Image 1 (cartoon, one colour):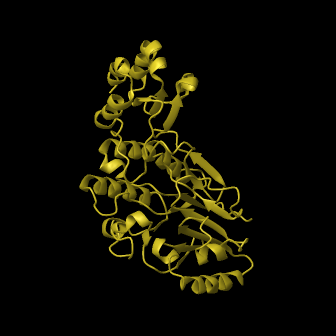
Image 2 (cartoon, helix red, strand yellow; image 1 turned 45 degrees about the vertical axis):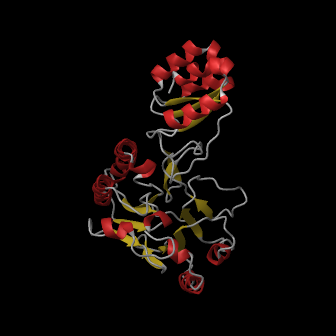
Image 3 (tube, helix red, strand yellow; image 1 turned 90 degrees about the horizontal axis):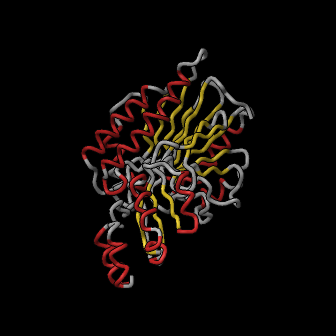
Length: 347
């Protein structure tokens, strides 16, 4: 496959600004990632002896809470995206399901309302249509399919016509960018694209960058560039799809589930990470001092009875849900009375 090294296309997505119920401390973690990793990489590309043109593509779900926007989150996101736009030639953004107020219709779209006028080189695709953009001055063609466009069965015919048109030029490289579940073969567009081996398909929506080994090789679920909860245990990346490079997020907090048998692996984690440590009452009683010392190094560690389970998701997850109200109720109900004070001391 030909690479146009003069133009680099950088892909990221599922930023979910405003995650964890508009937590401002979590927002700061996200901004740190961009300031410490993402932006320096873009600057590096621009400051080389042979500067690179840059296409920046966001694969959707800019925001997290679709039905309300926090003013601070919006202003910080606008400032960030304006900075990103200054470092690229074109900034192309697909809407995801979290970017739309309603589940069943495209308008209003939060990214249209907040980001459309902050820079001339930002283009937002948020309607029910398929869009085409040239990614370089040669033959690299990007087809952009926002969330609601993927749900329109009638768009399949239009997509097929576009592919046929551009495929007539043997030098063309066609790339599809969308926001959908690439393993959903009930979607006619996904089903058809799965058979088009000559077209590289890049999608947001599913946060884990590795969906299934059964996916076609030309399907790329890019995942989120952030870790959001204790279900997110795999590495997260942003990508230069021109060079084939992936860049792991090593700045943001990660989430780890540990039990007493692998507690020593905690030394591999960052002090900013969030850790669920599941321990038995007996282990806690005999290793109380050790765990208390760990708590002084890892302030975001939760000491949890090893029988405790809880459902978590990006939309509803609250960083404080393991604190007093839920945990106190569980400890009082299920932990032997003479050991309850040990657990309660860590709340």
